[in-house]
Image 1 (cartoon, rainbow, N blue to C red):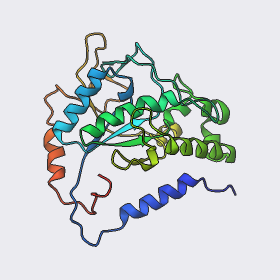
Image 2 (cartoon, rainbow, N blue to C red):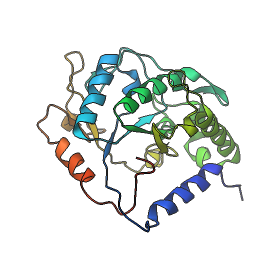
Image 3 (cartoon, rainbow, N blue to C red):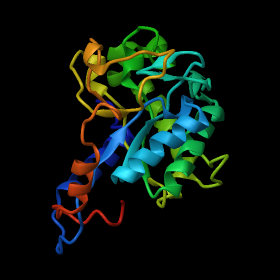
Length: 251
């Protein structure tokens, strides 16, 4: 039997905490969004997205520790900043990846939106253009079964948690004013052949990057800001609704 990686204990503790009712349930609900390429957008597009989210009442935006390539299109937006992978060799970390996210988190913080940080993209284990050092070393099965993979991933998580921001000057694990928390991995089920469902709020497409979510065969769970869909209403109503537990310590 292999030893359980420390992040499994974190997940268990977090899950139990989330399921434990508070003695005085006086906190409100909240909503947020997910945008995996926010760090690759121009400053202007980042500001437009974050300002729109803040205006509509979002409290959390999930961001991903992943790479981006300048010149590419992502769901109607132009990527203007290249961001390298955090690891090109196991255990060798490139702070430029986290620096790009830290800059975005500072912007979110100024609008009183917290970040939920995903330390790894499970799509990197699919073997396509997103493949990374973990796929090359362990493959999708070994990543979830080999003790060496557990140890390497534990080291990655530890490095991310202890990273000190180039823009913020804050150690991420201590920056509770801006970071809600860290999940273990994004879209884990994708890497084992199961679909993941999440909604993204998208900026309107630019001319160079035409895009419609309905026409995206691989991932059509996107709502564009100029589509006429009411995004503000549900988010604001969530903030007016009593939650099952008091989220004020983390939101």
